Length: 249
Image 1 (cartoon, rainbow, N blue to C red):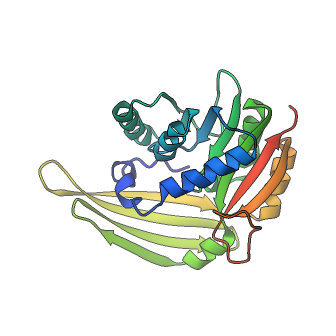
Image 2 (image 1 turned 135 degrees about the vertical axis):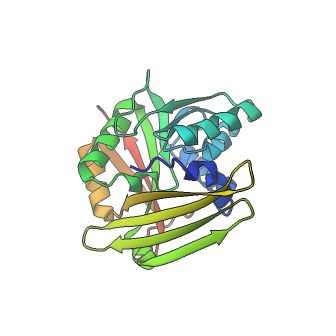
């Protein structure tokens, strides 16, 4: 799994085109539809804490889990600034541990795509089931095979005043693995630009595979949506949301 070591420093800068507030409203509605109006909610793959902060502002008692210390450092800076009562834990989601159960678990921004092995994803789902309250809700999104096929072999570049990046993308249709190499140029305190390189891997999953893994983990699938709608996924859906429920340990 990628740890966003260098990218963490400029992650929010390059993600400023993501409508987090709109996403949070949609996620909030999914939680409400699942019967979770308030209470303790865990976010897996919380990153720099943007969504965690938004959900906290909606009245949820938030726990954020992420494997990347650099991302969590930024999340803690946001927490200090906002005064939000959020617990952040540096843990790999494949091995996360909590002191008790939670009403809901959420994971967004394709964090689950970073789990590239089916057995690891099954382990995540089993841990989620273990730490959910009876009848608790699990909501997560995934980038689709269609999206990765559209990305294919491509190059994305963006230039900002304080930093720039080059994203070189490859998608292996047979292995269903998407690889992207990030080359970052980040301005330091002396006004010079330092070069950093990272490689990230994501897995594209068939919807049927996810449904089967949820079932194996003891979770009941309640809905699959084309992202930000309440409609079934389409052939050209780029992101989908899954809603599952704890029905027993």
